[in-house]
Length: 130
Image (cartoon, rainbow, N blue to C red; front, side, top):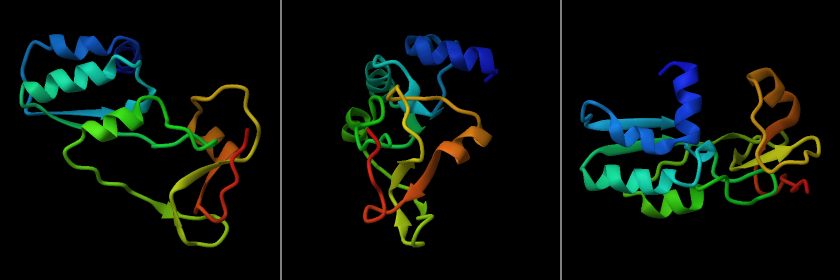
């Protein structure tokens, strides 16, 4: 999907329902960034027997649900959680450590900016930033 179409979809997830073809599977990258109506859209797709694969972080750096992820996870018929290694101790990282305080719950950054502001941490090394 072109970048401008993807940005429009994040703000208007209902647009997914008016596709001019019926796919077997829909993949939604960064589903946690979509508007709350994405939950209704996913339910409609599931009712149409369309597989929905979504990826996103699950929690913010403060430990709160990222967007609609808590709700989407409860709807899922299968959940696969991918992890990386903690930057402090090399254990399995399940959290995002904020390295600087931010004034918004969700901040969209470039790949380069992400590495300066966030890093993966295990639960023992993670300290929520408020």
